[in-house]
Length: 217
Image 1 (cartoon, rainbow, N blue to C red):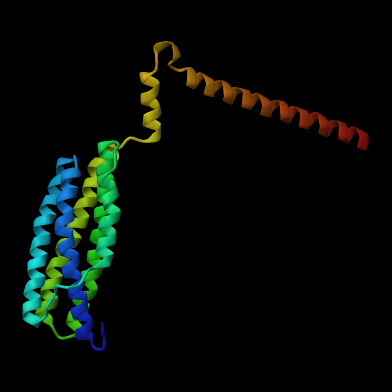
Image 2: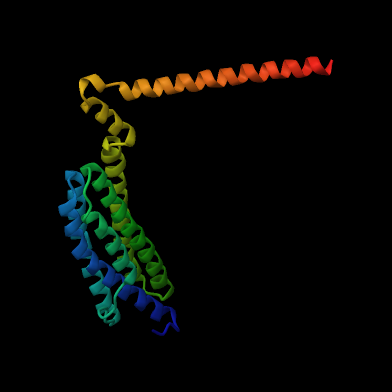
């Protein structure tokens, strides 16, 4: 790879984006199948269609510049997809897994937002205003997709996601009737004992201080 002009840098970035988008068209269907939230599943499927359009736009740019886009692999996207594939194999609560899918997807979106933003700037610097305009259109869609994922996560998933506290409550409710509240009573007794010990220690310290004062006199 030789980068001796801003045009050569632009071409390299376009090849990288082309590889990234093509990899993503294979990953998004798997994420959509894993998702259980209807809103999240729809978001993944909608963005898949957008991603296919992004590939077409890059092909259009390649034709305009007389540039061959294939033959290059975006290692960054490959790494992000590999990391996200761990969620696809995960077991657990559906809501938590959906939140994990969003985390993986937003890492991808933020990478693409960065990549499209810099590539657009390179296109402007190279005097390729039409290319810059096309890249901006995709950049806007990537930003909108990221915001939609945030809305689903914060508005739907996180308010309903189980926490360690809620899990403890569920275990308490599912315990045999005779043992319900036993752990709570034990915790309360422990707290009472601890409080009593602290008071005893404080009284002992006070008496010791009084004796020391008397001797000093």
